[in-house]
Length: 139
Image 1 (tube, rainbow, N blue to C red):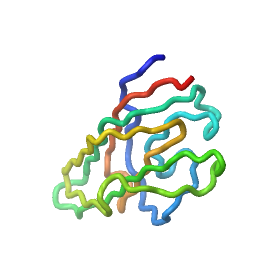
Image 2 (image 1 turned 90 degrees about the vertical axis):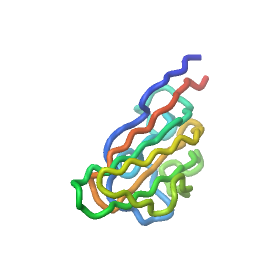
Image 3 (image 1 turned 30 degrees about the vertical axis):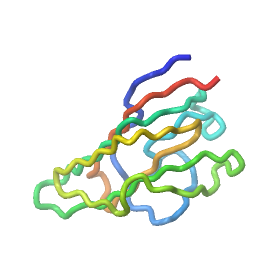
């Protein structure tokens, strides 16, 4: 059973999402989803993951207004398919980042196949993120 240490996902946070549940589909506010063909048939192998670190960086120029972020955990639910699923907060509510600020979370988070991490922000394309950890094949 192979275990891969890697950057699970990296990119930019998207605009603010105010719903308490989310339609589970690629893109949008999904930052990382543990591979599960039941959710996304194109992913191939089913994998579980251990997130070891998440980092968020506000790359706005100095003097720009602070940006608010929210990060959530969503549990896979085979009975709901792409339907709405409840979100659980990982970081404090409406965490504010000033220009150049970095926030990291190093509390391990286990994800079963199909579980996901979601995020949203008050300003598009200014918050860089990286999610690091392990993936392992589920047999």
